[in-house]
Image (cartoon, rainbow, N blue to C red; front, side, top):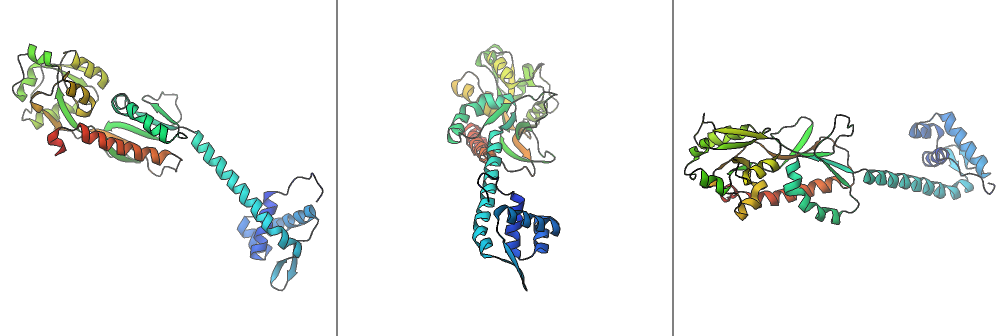
Length: 308
């Protein structure tokens, strides 16, 4: 082989190593998905390239010549290295593409963002992109989602995170202005701050406390829990909100949970991902971390009676 000539093709190397292993161009053709004629041409091309005969015919089929036996381990090593290189590039491409997490805004504000630096430090090669809105022109679907709802989600596996422990909360100043809160029925004289996506909370509360058919004096609907919490802090009304989202305000006394009133909702915060999702570097680790962090968060923020 003259110096400076390009190396043989991977097809020729694969044909050569397969014939060496199987001892037949016919059997090799089936293994490499080529015609027998094409395999023979690849072998001849390689022999011409090397300037050496690689096979001799025997009663048992094709047998490696001395030159073929010398060249075989180098051809196998070259193919192995090419496969490893392709695998590394595929892994690099998978790592380079960020993991897209779509979530309701309150989850990021009240839970994930404070904890995520620990994951990022432990997994510096995993790029996670967070969104709470995907525009109509967005074509790339999220890899995982965190949403409030009730399973099942068709075509997805779902893992409960937190949020089913719902508490009635209010600012102390509001309760003082309203003359206190002595029984569950007192909620009817209050303004209810309601999340427009959680209309069932009122029905679940009244059912849990024997108030079926009761209605609040006034209802104000908002689209974000952060706004509902701010409105409750400002004394604009009482709110039914997952206890975990107001744990800090309850601990500080900025909000109170009158009479410990609350309920266990059918609705919770769930992590979902498509069934049969291809494996990606970092994704399983991220999901495992999210679930473990959520379990600790849920246990730490549940009401004592709910935790028992």
